[in-house]
Length: 417
View 1 (spheres, helix red, strand yellow):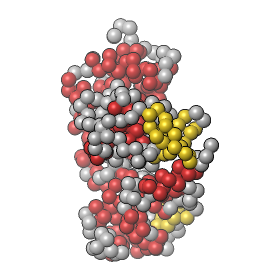
View 2 (tube, one colour; view 1 turned 30 degrees about the vertical axis):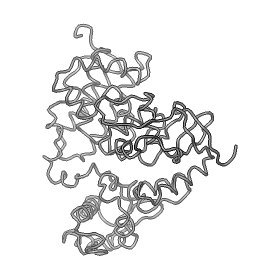
View 3 (cartoon, one colour; view 1 turned 90 degrees about the vertical axis):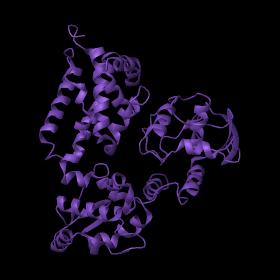
View 4 (spheres, one colour; view 1 turned 180 degrees about the vertical axis):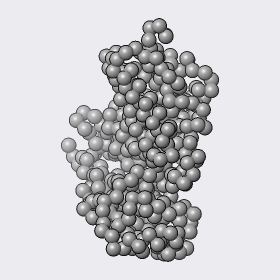
């Protein structure tokens, strides 16, 4: 095969790239699951409706998708958004009728730039690395994972804390280059060494300082035009005092997972993090009465974990709830295994049946949290691999409710069903 050549490939054969930096998706995800994520994600940057509108009346052949063959599978490295639209157009993936996406004429056979992976990755980096379509963190991840570059300080801070993905206003070039530069980090009592984020502060102190930095960026106290370079000077007096007092302390590794944006406020005002109460539902929709077995045992364990959380939520970190979200996938897989099914088969067979047993208020909750027959397998997969996503309590409760309804159908006690 040549390094690059143009070939026509049926759009039905094209496989969407699960490791596109736009969203890190489970490598076993199907085209349908990727399409669901692209359309339904609250934080989606895919913007399919906007792209469809920008395409005009017809498909532009001058914009070739970049494709690499993995064995016999043609995998789309660049052009995934257009290919999702094409798959929707030709009903190769399904979307809700309520989705307002008007797609232009689309060929069934697509001219593609078929190339070796090394060339494909260079092409992707050239088109997206500095064009503004990727944010700084996505670019750093791509460079490290695919181009052999060392992890940047920005990427190490994210891996150690989740601070940047939890607070998108920090994912900017000037924050990366100036706020979290090695010089400023050292002045604030932090450092990056041996691939780890280190600090001179106690963990709670370090959290307070990083949260303070986030607030100053979000409130535009520090911008490229205002107070530029004056990070330490703009921190709260109490944090400046911490930094000064800890100057002689030794460095130690610091790891903490910030919950979704606004967590630092929720830590000070616990009532703001009680979103479960606002939903008006309990885990699994209430107590379940299941037949004896391992599935019932795990359900009982998860319920006890949730009880422990509700009794101690003021002292626990908000991200503790992620443990409950992650365990739901294991519970669903165990229930499916009992029936010699895969998890996807189990949810497809029982979702609609379970939903019919719920009242209108509860089904509205499912819809609000984008918990559908098509999305639930991916939500379970992502919740088990993405710690930030797993901390979404409202969505976790919604998933548990429909899972509880399905378990009642398949594992309920005979005298209760």
